[in-house]
Length: 64
Image 1: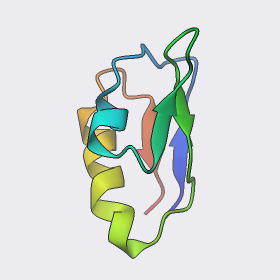
Image 2: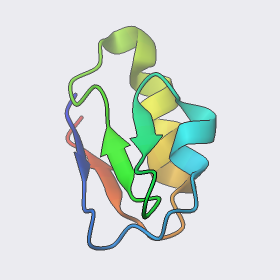
Image 3: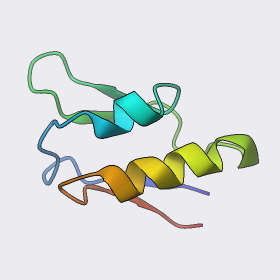
Image 4: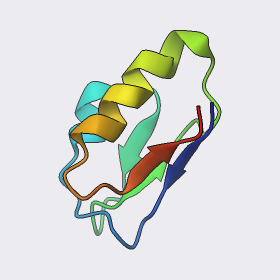
């Protein structure tokens, strides 16, 4: 699995960080998503999928 963030679409809602803080953070100045682990293992795949589903801006995608 690979996580891709479209930082131009991100609105800084922070849902990804709430669901998966081991995978995501936010910029201090603008709140834009920062992907901490772009290729998480199988154990973190459910959290990554949930973050993608919850993103109000649809700024996150996964390839698997």
